[in-house]
Image 1: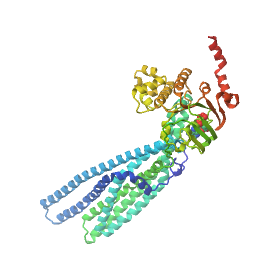
Image 2: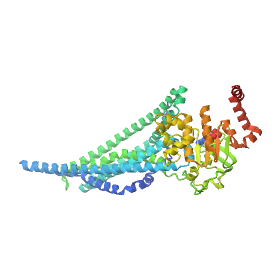
Image 3: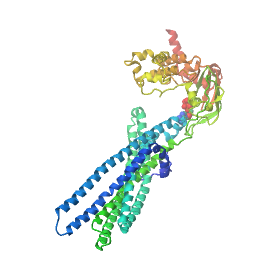
Image 4: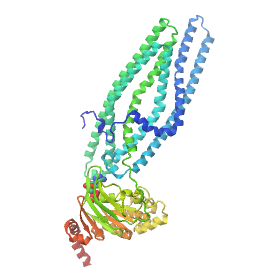
Length: 616
Ligand code: ADP
């Protein structure tokens, strides 16, 4: 259990550098508020009128107390005069309440409307942004899905409530406080000064409180991120966890994190309660001082002082201290917003991660890739390719061969411009990939991966993803070419069945059907038959054979049948290109390819299989 209470450092929070100031926050959020300037203006006007209204109680009670006092001192009590005072008070106070209710409604409604609009705009903007990032962005540790998601969620909700806080909490409260302070000074300078002296003391304590709690709040944010990432990891790995009976280990890991958060929260609360107690005490001292001072001034018959002023000053002081009482909460909210804003605007303002987009869009894409002297390193520091050079001929089938981790998928990632090489160059049809319009390039490239390519949605939607404008007939045609049509129509809902419910082999053929409908001249197949059974592999081989004709195909496979069919093969070992040529040539060279082929044949027991088949 993480019992040790170490103050978390702001730098410990992933993706948060701890640098955003209030000024920067406002500057960043301004463009999102600007489109709603009319809403802002309306809210500000309502705010000002509400603040005026907030002082009415004090003025009315001041006058009422004095009027009642005068009446009592007249000796003979007049019912009519008393009734008049009561009616006037009631009418003024009730009318004020009605007006205040309408104003509060308008203010809250407009403030909330602004929050909702800003929240929508922030979400749309961040989605656009993350869709535009290059793949390398997602391989950095700080951008794991859980962490990114929590930065976005918390950023949107905290920033939109900052906008709301600003217009329906901070502004009204502080306008009201300033007005009340002005009224106090107008009533009596000494009383005004007492109120004014209490304010900085209160501010100072709040400042100390916020400073003291800042590290803890950041720590809680970091732990929340780790917790949500942890839960995501559990769900993703549930099969492994259960099959190894490792529920206890996972539960303990989460319990440790929970314990850490609990400790952090308890410390934050304890500190908050202590500071809040001190602040209440200071506020009460202020009230007592104001009562004593006003009573003294009334007793010495100071000009303009009457008994009603005691009530008046206390109520006005309440109007000054009420907003300041909220100061800490607002300070906390703003502090949260500053923390979350760092992470959130970090995403929005990240220009260097946006995919480069060249302008080269040729009518005809031939499919000749020339890779020369390419080194490549992933965001986490793993160097996956070392000085790799290859010429991938158009219209031919090229197989990339090598053990797991050799760098085969990395080559495909570079060819599809998901990543850029550290050095060296990659050209397609004689033009550097960086100059190619990325979307145009990807429109001309089809990618079939080992997994993770079927979306939640119907089979039809999944096939149509290859070409959103395709007709239903074209979807059916593609399914036929991928040898999956018969199986789809036998399903109770046919093409409207959920694609995720299909088996691995069927999903793979849906991906191939999507490729047929996209009809690109270049195709990358990254272990398309890994983890499939022999029958499914053969059926997929048939659909791949159908799609291969006349296209540039690059295939990564552990399946000898698919490798042997290739026109050319490149053999990679630990990121280095070690062999190249036709399958026969490379086999005769010996080396890793021969080892892979021989051991595949042995593991499949090819001789025995041949004997069995011949014996029939
Ligand atoms: P292969 O396809 O030959 O199995 P890869 O190209 O997938 O090999 O991987 C080559 C090396 O790069 C491996 O060491 C692997 O751990 C690393 N690698 C692959 N993908 C990533 C990634 N997204 N982030 C960091 N390292 C990666």
